[in-house]
Amino acid sequence: MRLLNTIKFGFLYFKKGSEVLRTYSLDFVEKFFSEGQRAFKNIYISNSFLNNNMKLTILGSGGIIPIPKPLCQCKICKEAREKRVPYSRTGPSAFLHDINLLIDTPPQIADSINNANLKEIDNLIYTHLDGDHFDGHSTLISLYFDGTKYCYKPKKTINLFVPQRINEKLKTITSQYGNLFDFYTKDKVVKKKTIKNKIKIKDITIIPIFVKENPATPYIYLFVDDKGKKILYAPCDTKPFPFESKYVYDVDLFATQPGFFETGLKDGFVYPQDDYTRVELYSFNQTLEIAKRIRAKKILFIHLEEYWNRSYDDYQKLEKKYPNVIFAYDGFSLEI
Ligand SMILES: [Zn+2]
Ligand SMILES: [Zn+2]
Image 1 (tube, rainbow, N blue to C red):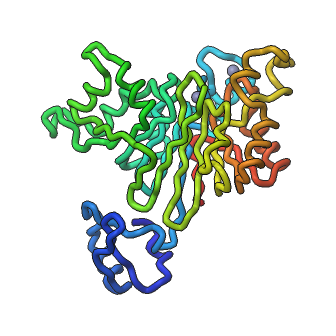
Image 2: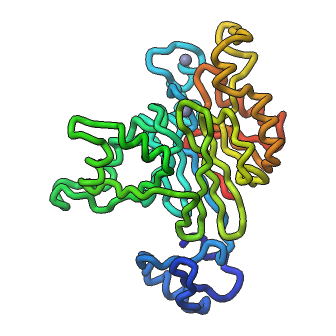
Image 3: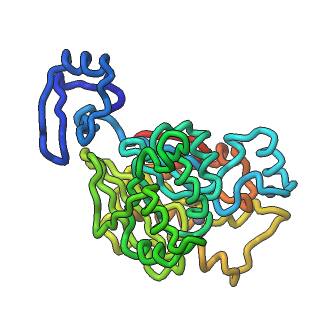
């Protein structure tokens, strides 16, 4: 329900799922919003109708290790400690505003949510359960918990959507109270729903794409709005890239990690030909090739590692070399 000034059609309709409930004139719309009646349950104004774009914010643009890396005195970390954002980077997570969707909970997720000044989270998905994407899960408890007002019950329960293989993995993760997500479900922190092939929330379709033969059991996600605009979100563990899926092609935005850099690493380090990094990750040039092969219109690089030894300024310079490439920073937003 944003950007009312973008209404171009003179009318607005309310939908519940795909069913059109009512149509109103613009006069009514102005009155409706001036009265602040925005919080009708199950009723929303179609973004497509308002001609809105999908809005994605990168909450955390860092990788496995945050920048500054604790204890580290390298020039990248020192600069980040002094200047903070956009030089500092928290762990990999993002937020799709259209449906208040949080993607992943890295260890620094509380800081990332605060930095972006988010007001609501309704939905949650995980790309995979490696620590850099998952270990901040206990922050979920604090989001809607208020011990004084809600008798130790959260004000709101977040919908957690999980594809099959992540669901299987979640069942194996325990806390001192037994299964971790059974505990979160019982305390109404999350409500877990499995995704079979795709799921539609308001006017956004979410399609999980499994990355086969990767030990991290990762998924990448395609988000498609009602206008057919596509964001492919593939932050980590993208190898072997799932070219076999029809959903990875012709996307408007490909948000992914840049892969490893061959040059410019700390102390002149060069990855040997038999280094495990070459097995696990694509290189920067290989990643650009993938973007070309899937015909991505724009590339947004995320999951930027401390050990790539590059500062915000270095990435800015690199952006100038590649016209359709953006390097994200914490809190970076764009609309597609
Ligand atoms: Zn460092
Ligand atoms: Zn990762």
